[in-house]
Image (cartoon, rainbow, N blue to C red; front, side, top):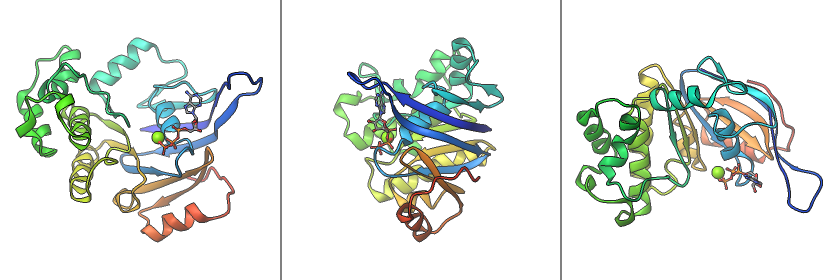
Length: 243
Ligand SMILES: Nc1ncnc2c1ncn2[C@@H]1O[C@H](COP(=O)(O)OP(=O)(O)OP(=O)(O)O)[C@@H](O)[C@H]1O
Ligand SMILES: [Mg+2]
């Protein structure tokens, strides 16, 4: 569903002639199922997710998402894919403050020009245990509630691929478990979920775990135990591009 080849990303540093390299040549393949990305803070997880989802352009290398090469895709085609096939949960939620929780969840369908399927919206809010807050605006919700609205918004549209940047970062372990189960419904329908997390037990619910450090792919683990991930994170740094 997604293939990345030698993704590099550098950002210019104000006042310096050389840029800082944040991703140093990451190659990976994401098939249907659930994949977690773990790595220390600042290791490049969000940047990688953005590059893989077409929201950030790599400095070099390429990603092919659902059959489309993101280096040459038009903005229009990408927008269309976001309406119909891709869901994205941002680390900072990105809810629309003037819309209620219900309207936020219905937004992708409205933008897609579809008739809003009220059952799907209600079901998504029920799945994240927020139907009782359907008419509240984001500003009156807690951080964890806002995060769950963002998850419901991405999932109500039944995407083929879901990208989620620390989707349970603001949640208690019980709610996190429930959200992880809900995200897995994308994979149950034959799609792919790619989520970033700091939560090792949550990562272990995934089918594969991609471990990155200092902008490089360390290793890809298949259905690991927590100790496997901790060992990989603690191992001496020697980036690989194994799959
Ligand atoms: N637009 C940008 N301009 C300059 N540097 C950036 C930019 N975006 C990210 N970086 C740098 O790239 C590095 C990786 O950032 P990124 O947000 O991808 O990390 P992360 O692994 O998601 O961290 P966290 O776990 O804290 O969310 C950081 O050092 C950050 O300062
Ligand atoms: Mg991040």
